[in-house]
Length: 443
Image 1: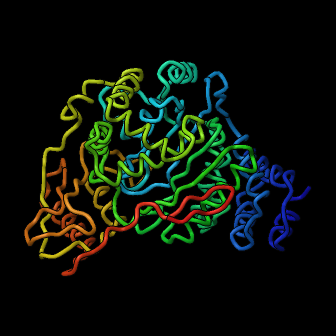
Image 2: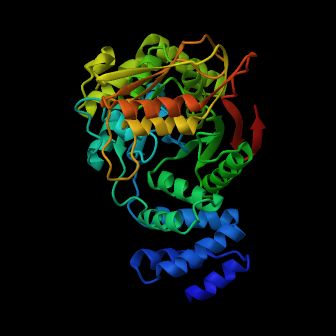
Image 3: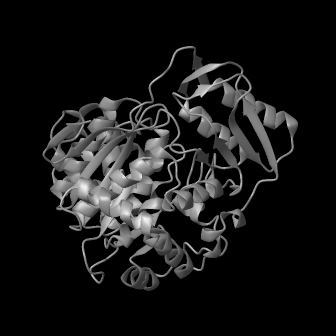
């Protein structure tokens, strides 16, 4: 088997066999196939695409390139949730204890964030004492006892994907749906889940900017899951404005706590109930989504979900007292109000720009080596569709730098992300569609 023949075959639009894909990935990981040949193959995939079978084969080859988590010692159907990312995406912090309280075990590996704000692990590490790095034995035992654990990803999970992504990033081959889908799904499959719920964001603050592209990505990932025997569904959810009101690590932990108390933002609460209900259906703890939502609402109202959060945090060394007193979380020193220059209604918000503002304050990372400030971020006060008067506070910057020039730059950039209207504006949809192996249900 020769690499050049495989490149020629893909360039001609033909389907690669599992053996040919295995040959390419194994050779690249071992260093026997050079970057320039894999780059050529990636570019051929960008132009020619991949069939569902090819994409599934690529996914499994990458999943099998390193360590795989065996969750068989945990009773029940293990359901994982993955979000394609966004601004203020706090759903895992709410869903992990909530779904676990409903009897579906959540054994989740998450990452640190690169971009606007921290990842799930960064957010959890805003809780004093929380230890995201746990041994495999502790991880499994905690899920068996508490029903939930969230740890940082092993260094040897999908090493093939790590190498491929780094190459794609510098060869203009990131924007390929088969490559994106296999990258995401290889990590989910290596993590050991029996079933997967995907939250595929769409809009200004999402990787996929259009609903059509988001649906194509969702269809590809659902097809992979189905092909390799994992029950998989995807929700297409809006990211034309940040989710909830908090953007930043400690701020989002605080908002998650309020949500589990039944006091969270309407959009974050609604999305968590929808995603969680689908997780319960796949975990065979609810007959349908409506029944699942009712179960989850009852767990929030009874305090069981909040108590599970306390148990989860304490089991990983965190200070559970912050759940009763979120003011114990890291707090910024400087607060800077951004006020509306006009009266009327908020017409739109550039979610990506708002996320960049949070990163400029220190809430996110521009590079993997950059430090992150767990206390800083942005607290939104108004969102799309809200009525405003001139001088109303649109947002509050939480900062640890008193540099007036930096704060003014962030304020100006944040204000430029808003547009206003003198007529009433409808709030944007939260859920656009649900994608399953049987098709697409539009909302």
